[in-house]
Structure formats: structure tokens, C-alpha cells
Length: 124
Image (tube, rainbow, N blue to C red; front, side, top):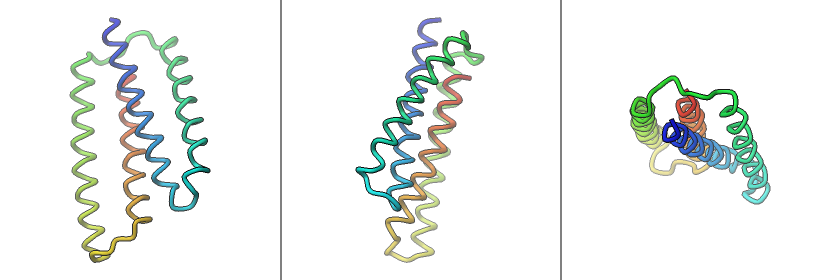
């Protein structure tokens, strides 16, 4: 039981960190890194506080630990394939000089989506 909860915590924190990095990547095109970093840190700390509240209310996960790891692996593989295919498509559409701002928004959105899905599976 404790091992399953520890796995949930680790996977949730990885998902939260991925979401925070995605927000940092996505919004780096319209703001500076220095102005975004406090926002990212506040969101990450808020997600940790949210995790504590969820763990108090949600005692046992619905999936076994190995099922959660398989879902996590599946999400990782699917998101990685979609990121690579999208990068190739963007490069094909825009030529060799893909704008870094377009690529940052594209990759940031995938990191946000990956983090949200990963956090959801960690607590499922």
C-alpha cells in the first residue's frame, strides 16, 4: 500500500514538473524567463499542496501499480511519437528555418498535455 502511494506521488510530481516546464516553454515567446519563473514555481508548489489534499481524500488508487506504470509508458510513447511527427511536419511546412517561437509553443503544449495526463494517471 505504501509503495503504491509512493509511486503515485513520484509520478504526480513528474507530471507536475512536466506541466510547469511546458508552461515555461509555451509562454517564453511572449514573456521573459525571469518574469515566468516565479509563476512556474508558484504553480508547482500549488500542485504539491493539491497533491496533499488529494492524498488525504483519495486513500487507495483504482489501478494497480503495474497498470499505472504501463499507462504512463503508453502515454510517454504516444506523446513522444506525436512530438516527433509534429516537428517533422512543422519543418516540412516551414522549411529548414522553423521559427523557434512556433516550436516552443508546439513543444510546450505537448509538455503541458503530457503532464496533465501523467498526473491524472498517477492518482487514478
